[in-house]
Image (cartoon, rainbow, N blue to C red; front, side):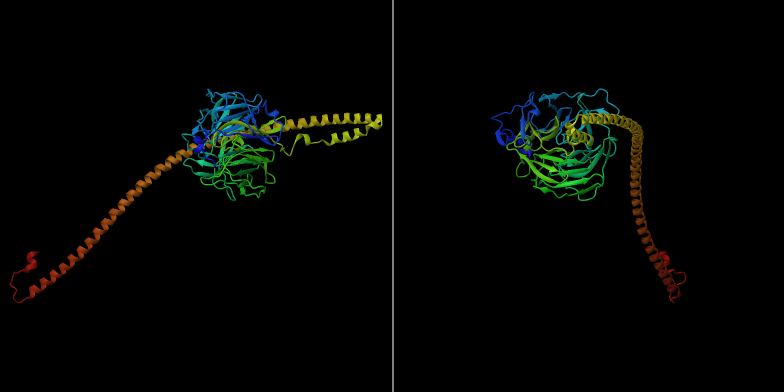
Length: 526
């Protein structure tokens, strides 16, 4: 896996960047490709360098990017061992860079509070409506738990979302994947360089964290891996690295059964890698960049998530972002075409270049492929309409009747949809009310839990004091028992001496030479 420790020495090296153009490799230092926009890219499945205008961002890697309303937002990253905290924006329409001046929020809402986001790297950015969520990442002064930040491009403000439940510990290099209405956080590297393979899920409707128990064989602890969602049900994990090795394994988690499995892949076998980037186009998962203990990976791969078949899309020599470690990769659609956009990364030197690839892979369901049976029927009739004028009139009458029927059907469907929408809205309001009540109950329970914890600590302290006192009493009792045993021994000895004394006294009193009134030794001594 490529290391940032060699970045300071490699940053000064100037090497040629080569891109694929019409199947040939072209040195972009000798020939710069000037682009008016993504639409000017004509070739499919080839990386093309974009010459964007405006002040270029500082080169970086391990940053994050997200697309909101025709713009790519790039936040944070690492450059020469220093964390970055700037927000850079690439406008896809004008293909120009600009830097946003982030402001503080003057009136925080009930759910959010004003915050200043510390410079970080190894975090994740997720589009959330017209806003952007930011999770995790390494910082200079790490916090104990992971917090969720939200950026509003309209007001240029960062805020902290109020979440419930037990937040995951802080980390960087994890994966953050949007699965339905939830965010799934997996793995990463915690403070102290400990690797993780835990799974945490944030419900974006209730803003509640949950840590689910899973079955099957978990992926080994790792960071700098890639993750994707398939069919709003399956979470895929590919690659990543530990402190000593990189992986090329593929793991699948069924979010309904919470069971891990290792699908049998087809096609090529990917090289082990970490620090790569991924993005999905329909059922195809594109993987770019990354590196291992031996080298960087230059091929762009695609995995069909239905068949688990790996294949190579294209290759790119040199040190361009799509071959780098820690580059960002986003998807942007223009006129029905899918474009992969790569920015930044590290491959011996830090990059601030932008590359784009127009994908020939399409989603299985396309609006242009959906045909209506009625339209096909009318078309087949119209092919025979040249024979007579009467047939044409019949076709026109048939079309009018079907238009009327469609209008009536559309009106009925609209009424039904409106009624269903009202029911759903009413149910949604009830659910929001119930959610608000549950949140309040949860807050009360947490407060009560804090009080009970304090009481429990007090009782534990008292119990410890009583245990110490009991131990002291046991020691004193043991000492008293020893004294009592000594006293009993002395009493027995005294009794024996008394008996001997009485015996001697009797012998003395019966002697023939005993003088009257003579008491003997013991009596005198007594």
